[in-house]
Length: 236
Length: 288
Image (cartoon, rainbow over all chains, first blue to last red):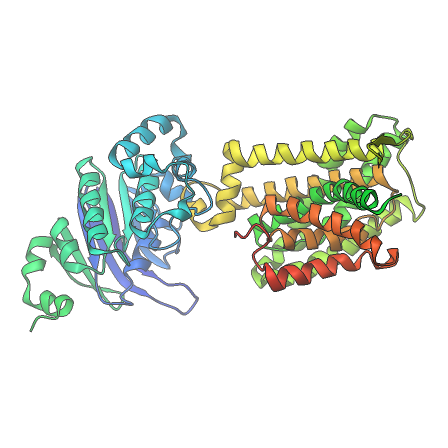
């Protein structure tokens, strides 16, 4: 029995639109797994399919032995699999603390405990907790989005391009946070544009091309692979 | 009367009538915020609330407080049912389709009231008080009580939205329904709740109008333009803005009496919408 197991998944947005043609990945407890590939490869769609935002047309999506394929997003979250979208991932008109409260909607009993942990880890958010979410900078927004996901005490976090549009410093902070969250035993599957940086913090990676698995393996090995370096880093 | 006092009197009158408009205006804005559609059947739910108050107060002889409570529940329930039957199936065709359908729904509901209660003008059974005179300003006690009821309703709604978990969930759905779903909130349930509370408030607005004037099937339709203007002026979906918009429209309508014949009073609503769209497309409070 795997932790997260996705097999032979076919999915898309419209009736004739097939973005994922045949994709499979797995994530083990406490792992960081990167999902890489060119634009349009279906990386985000894969995360959305796991999260319940896109229903798979066929294939298997299982979490700890139970199928989560076709469940509503909130039912997937309730099982401990929390998706952090790339954009629109906070509630801009709610205060930061209200954002965290909504983030912990599914774990109300542990609200105080989770809030203390999040504020301890992200003191910047604690200092600004009365400000509306919309007042935060891009990097802080991403941190808040991840903090909201932490409020349910997740077992697996799905991050969709967490460093998109961030400054190099803010991206560094974010990768640091990803490692710290994994250190607490939360598994992470993330889609990233910044392939090399992403491979440096990951245990394993999958490379998707045109809706299918192209390569997979240990992150360290993929980072050394000449083909990969050529595709993602433009090396000759 | 001297002109300064004249203006002050009109401003006071405008604030009183604006406060009554504010209740259905926040209803309109609340529904827009959560469902992203303009629901013009607010008008018929105002009338429904007015008739509920008529039955409870004039026919059954119960006090106004009971009329307010029952008007809220009756309009809320009819609001949820009519939304479910008539508007929800059209939601995937876009907000304009739903807005037009809501006007049709309004005609249907209004004529159901006409069928049940006739076209005769009815009134609530309330005592007539002598006006209070404060520093030369006349205030009708009933208008003042209406103002208090409207203020209490608005404070209650703000407390609900600001401090309760269900209120925060509503604001979350208004901000981003997909993210709210991921966080464990059922956007459909929240939408139904917003329609219930919104149409319930429209019903209370109907009671307030009935206390102020008379009851007939088009009692809501006659004020839907200033209500819509108040909501647009405040920024559609901005509940606090709707209150400010309603007070402004109320005062502007009264002040227009200085320069325009009373028949043109309803042009103020149109005028306010044009001003809002030209100069404050996001509302006078500037957000959302």
